[in-house]
Image 1: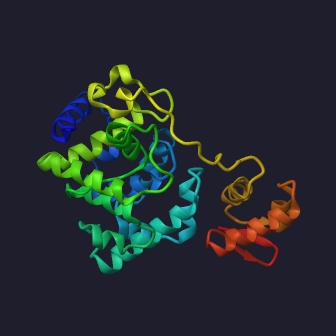
Image 2: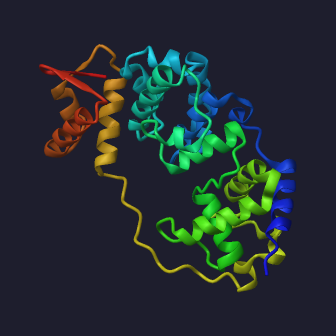
Length: 286
């Protein structure tokens, strides 16, 4: 039977020795919250400069809430998925209005904020306030799946079995639970990679079920959605043009920037529906 407490001890020791010195790990709860919004589906290297500029400009939720939403979208830069900027602005507004300007410290209160799902609520509660809760991102799911299930990758969607497994590790960690949550996430990001995991550097390789089983492949999954020519690419290009022209741009300039006029029109309508841009006559602004 796997010794979860020993695995916790080994990976926390690894984390103490090799963890990246990421600035939000030393920040206040708001700084942690900003990082968690930005890190969703975005690599750390791209987040670092934007996060630093963001928390310097808006070191509290109230300061962000006092700004127009267009400023949040503009400051979001090219992180992608710009609706996250709107959700972060909405959460800051809710915190300023309902929480006396302080980021709430419980999962339930965090979950009630706009744009905060189960993962983000758990991450903020754990990393900002030391809550003993599992934090299940893709990296953590992969590590725990390999350790106990002998599969290369977790299922496409989070399962109840995964939640139960993560809770068992959190319980085994006891007072180390917040440190464990950070350690296993970092380990998945740096060592137990989706492709070419560095098993030679793994402190728990001898007890890894996937390694012991001979590294069986996971069942084939559907290919990732293409990027070139997609609506995501089109929306990003249109938004970049609008972002770099704060006084607004003519609609025709946006349509000329994309090879498919119907797609450009549909994407512009989508950006307006999401509240990311606004149209007045023939000009579009943030």
